[in-house]
Image 1 (tube, rainbow, N blue to C red):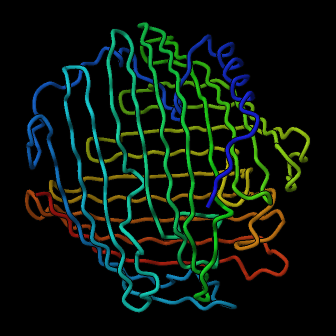
Image 2 (cartoon, helix red, strand yellow; image 1 turned 60 degrees about the vertical axis):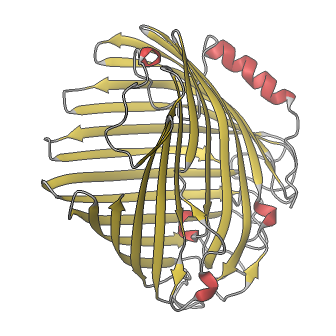
Amino acid sequence: MRIRPLSHPDWIEKGAFILGILCLGAFATAQAQEVPRPSLAREYTQTTLPTIYNVKAGPVLFRVSASLSTEIVDNVNLGNGTTTPAEADLILNPQLGIDALWTITELNTLHLHATLGYMDYLDHPRLDSSSVLLSPDSALSFNVYIGDFKITLHDQFSYQENPVGEGAVANVEQFSAYTNDAGLQVLWDANDVISTLGYDHSNFIPTGAISSSGQSVDTSDLAYTTDEITGSVFFKILSNLGGGLEATASATSYSSDTTEDAKRASVGPFVEFQLSRYTKIAASGGYQATFFANGGGASTTTNSSGLGNDYYADLSIENRLNRFVTSQLSFGHDNSVSILSAETETTYARLTTTMQVAPQVNVSGAISYADADDSGSLSPTLGSTAVTDYQLITVTLSTGYQITKKLSATLQYQYIRRTGGAIAGEPNQNYTQNSIALILGYQF
């Protein structure tokens, strides 16, 4: 499989120049919407040994954990219940977690986090993991402190085969893909003004899929790469109030000529307000433009030679009711790349709550809703050349119990419902999935 290089690299250079003007030469990583904290660059790396670690090999500290999940799922093939019946199964998922920390110097640290796993299906062995799975939060990072500057090199990677993680996909019982995001972040702390700079290169490489009918599907035409420059400048206005300006320029290139390459730029303000000791509010929003590079497909907001206008917005409210109950509510709208289209408009809302009901017992719940519109050419293997939309509701309830100092148990229930617009000549895109999992974890 070959992934074509990005076209018109000079656009990135122009984007960098524009960002330099907008952000006064201050840039950030893709996580720029999280407001940097004052004096972050002057925080020294911890020089004493962590209190919890399993193995010490010279200067490197290791922390190893293991877990085993037994999960009952009523619709492993994401069938719509009409043309494709829902099929149940019992899934075993052993995992091994590894954390490694190397304090190279007093100010330079190397950190590795990875979770390796495998999924075994009792009644659908064709869905067993084809190789070792890597959790989406697996990452390698290297922090360097130089005066008022903090430099972070990072590489985040994952390999997953569960199609539930891709909301645009339906009538598929397995979707395998490798993702990698490598980049650089520079943070400059000048007391009441914090400037950040970032660059990221991302690869999305699908390795195959299995349809609800059990047929293998070639998904190589869904591969894409993205280069992104992001930036922000943060001003501390009051002791409990800060804000600034953020901007992004990115270019996405698909391996298939049926999906349009896209370039995207956005700019807008952000603010963070500590309303009280227990309540924090963060908001961001602004203008977003999308340029399509060729005439490979259609779009709801632009044509192949034109300019798509949109907005992005996010409001997050975090509240700690007391030392036992914490909640966070966020909702917003954005326009991003997806596996089936270079333009996906998404309106979303999320609510999470965590309660510590006893010293060894915690209860948590989460509910999320997303309304997404995919525009442009969709892969003939997983859709058709059309505009499709879908709504995704996810509800998760869990309770955890610390059995001993090293052994814990978690009982989790999850409900997923996807509804999608009808596409001519394609199966019904709706599905519902319920799952109950018992997870045993052990900290060596």
